[in-house]
Image 1: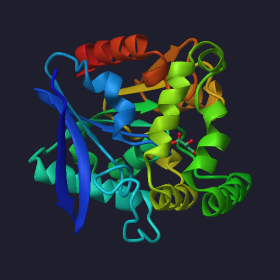
Image 2: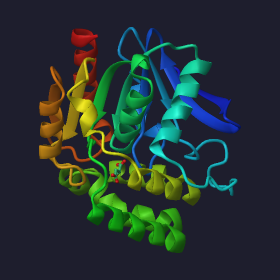
Image 3: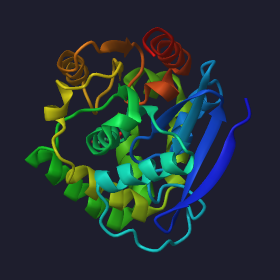
Length: 273
Ligand code: MLT
């Protein structure tokens, strides 16, 4: 399946997105500190009847990756969501299924808050609805200091062991190397801006009980960043949602176990949408 790399200017900024398949639109929102390329195993095998669209969040990867870009300033999850709505407008897509992994889930909640009618269904993978706790915000401040001192290399070193599950870490060095390459392909300013967006995000739990779209909650069983009980509670709070737990995978199950992830996704889309 050919993978189209496209660029569009939204609000004066170039946004890169990957586009594949044909049919009903499905927007995929990546995790921190990665990029649209996180979704490559899904983009290379789109479910029949579906068009997958994976954008980089503001500043990630994109045409200027690795080179100094104009400073992004402070960014919020609402800014990211507005960029994605701009992309849907550009593509003349009235409504899409939206799937977000971790930080991508935070942005998906923002999108749902801003424009519920543009969301046909939801996939919430390894994410949480709550805002950061005080302790979480203190860790974000440490991360900002790390980025200022050691750049994306420091972030990769600090985060890699937790981003994948214990099984992947032990048995699949090629997956760990792939995640590292994805992190290192980003500019430090995009990563810094994302930390500030995550630490200022609002609590999305008040949204959950009113979600009336088909929803799939997914989680890697070995996720050390967002533990399984968070996914179970998320599933419990969204009426009619489905929960799929992927054994042997951690925080990035779509990369760690793409076949199982893709099969669960295809089943959900076929049965619920
Ligand atoms: C992510 O994977 O997007 C981040 O680890 C989420 C977070 O730090 O809250």
